[in-house]
Length: 392
Image 1 (cartoon, rainbow, N blue to C red):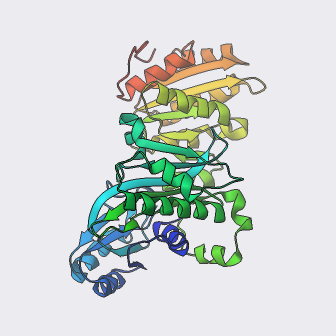
Image 2 (cartoon, rainbow, N blue to C red):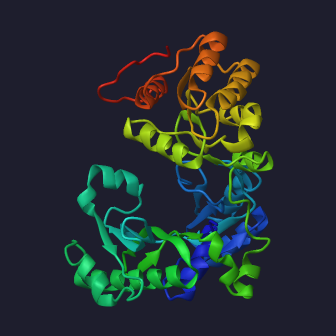
Image 3 (spheres, rainbow, N blue to C red):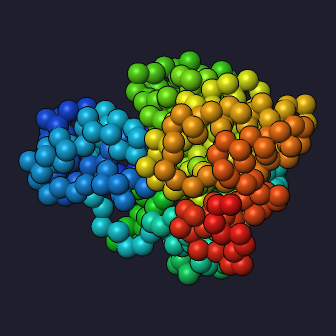
């Protein structure tokens, strides 16, 4: 469950972290009133449970209440990244000396909390990790012991932060960890965590995701504060998928994926990433979901970023020919204008391959890796050692 920025910041403030002065407005007139009360330059931020808002035009600056009014009017009621904007956060614009990154998250590798920190804040942490992995500091935490100030200080000791900045940031990391524990979050992220020109350490943003399985353990007052203030924690396509009874998650890539079983689907997404591409979705159509192959495929194709389709079936108890027939029917009905690539193995594979060959004129790949590479290439991604590039 992703909290909105202002909700996350309320948790940080409660724990003693400094956040900018500001308030939430549901109407443009409220935004102007808040901007007038704050004075000076303000930031107007659309409150949606999604990242990369700056790149989407969801963060604006204003030098007057009138400009804040116009910015809010431009944002409220508009969809951004698939989410309707129902409110904006108006905050004081701070004089920033440097931007940092800080987070506490669940770590599958260490099977516990992981503290992340980087002096390269304000950027996508994935990009920083890819370009300069040494700049992303990691500290696995024994949840039975917790994170001490000394632990945090040791993590920061090799950075170029001043002694005073290290002390203030170490304190912020400990408080972030405390928030993570108290609300049973799976992510508490501040990007950027800034050092202002007057030396303060301020959480300029807040991304908090709660473990859905732990919500029943949260205090009633805490949950009541979220009610009526939380937009759907999924995009329009994800909402449509839920209404269809499909497990659909929208991603930021261009390779559409249909596979059976959550495990195989995850492996397929990993393979797409491994070969240099980016998947456009998670969507598994195993079990009885294959009976919804046509609406499932239509859902994938509604994403304008999809430039190729990868179908990966592997059956043991499930018959691949039955699942394939559903997808073939969907392709014949919808006639996608993008190239389609198949990999089929397991029970009924001979019949399934014949279906694809005879009705679609396509030849499924013998190896899943070859199908993935072809789909990645067709989507326009560059990769090394491409094999079998075109659709067969």
